[in-house]
Amino acid sequence: MKIGVLALQGDFAEHLQALERCAVQGSPIRRSFQLEDIDGLIIPGGESTTIAKLTNSDNTIFDTITNKIKSGMPVYGTCMGAIFLANEIEGSSQGRLGLMSIKVRRNGFGPQKASFESYIDIPCLAENGAKSEPFHAVFIRAPLILSHSPEVNVLAKLDQSISENIIMASQNNMLVSTFHPELTGDLRIHKYFLSMVE
Ligand code: GLN
Image 1 (cartoon, rainbow, N blue to C red):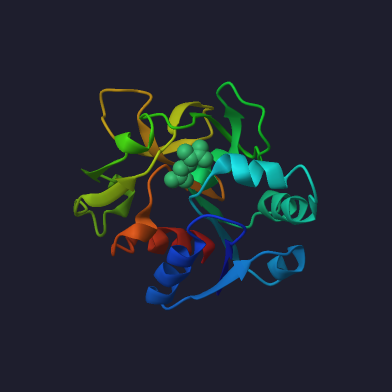
Image 2: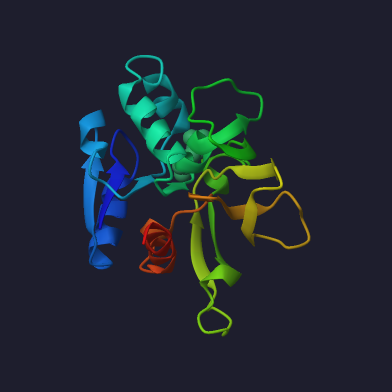
């Protein structure tokens, strides 16, 4: 299995390290042809307006990514990656892949100083019916997922009582989290994505 990590900007190096710790071959992706032999793709956290600008110039790599995702290649977007996959970004027409039926609000918790960490319950990480240990989640200028269409599975919420507080979701071969599992030692979400690829 070979997993590509989009390496145009953002914290791709941390995702590559997480894949290495999962004993899986990770490959930085900067050019379209490098996508040819990968089985899954991670789009890291970073700055969505920066990657959006790249979509204004040479679109070859984004067209290839779009075609591969539409043909079933699993993709996992963290934070900026989730914004880039969303089909609606509140109040913005910035470039995006727009493949997942979610509406996001950038910097949904506030500016950089409102970044935070929390231990969250992610039921899909449960093994053999046992409740999973809380996941140490790091939120850095994280987006909010404000709404979604019925085909989206909500996998985790920050606060169960607030409908807008979705922090992890999937839709067919697409997985997103608004936090950064690559920044803590916990590999469970990377492994969850790898099981989607398998
Ligand atoms: N706030 C950033 C954006 O809108 C995303 C931050 C992140 O990926 N940690 O692009």
